[in-house]
Image (cartoon, rainbow, N blue to C red; front, side, top):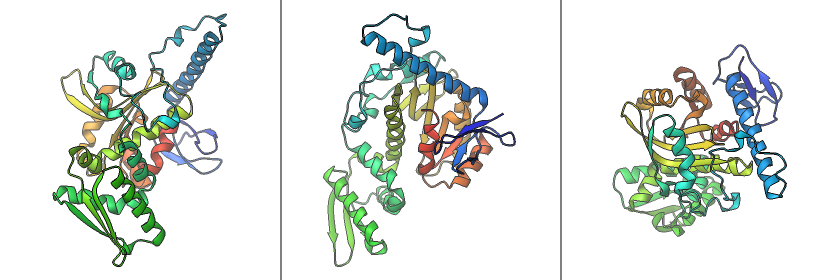
Length: 334
């Protein structure tokens, strides 16, 4: 019988009239919850128990009290990280072979070849911070992001934004956001004409910035959302962005975001800011090739409504989320 745990109030319930992967309101507080197959959910609980045991064993060794031998499960392949939550947005600690090794071993154990882009998780630049601002305030910035993407498609070098249509508070937030990105060189120029309420932005031609605005910002947002949860709860992880895998049938696929939690649970997050409907079958087959649960293969699109996400999930055996539901879904694995 499928079960759920409410991320808002902690209530655990079961539901026999719905399928695993579907959503329903919590019986206690009515917050949206995702149903999980009971064996899958129990497996996650066991993982958390074993992770706690490993932490306890490590603490005993650190205190010089190895009276109890570590259990065989303590030899986890998860990557130990000294990264702190406060340092997450300014660190090279993730951009190493050692940090990626558990992910590589997970794929190798399934006869899948993987190549990682170590630079893809280097947070010493400004892309991750800018992505956080966009994702956290997407309601106010969605229109601006559409205009920026349009400017890149048309190869414009300058963009005029009419801020007269915005609420005064939103207008100030948009201006502050653009000034910050200009200081980080994500815009080549910045100007604001108060008389006409016109914001002028010089489009940055650098390829890395173009890639960021045309889609990679969502990858950074998804990655840092999951890593913040792991770091806040002391969960071990190995993460990558932009890894390329070669399946047993020689097909090659690029994965937007992959995170291996506690050496066991692989999460794949595909981030789509544009049209993605024609690619759904490709992702269905990829999930099957990876042999992971439907809840572990996530398609994130900021424009999806909750109803659309639920409907697509029921149709295709994948998990579809928007920005608000992304963190709620990921929290289940932490």
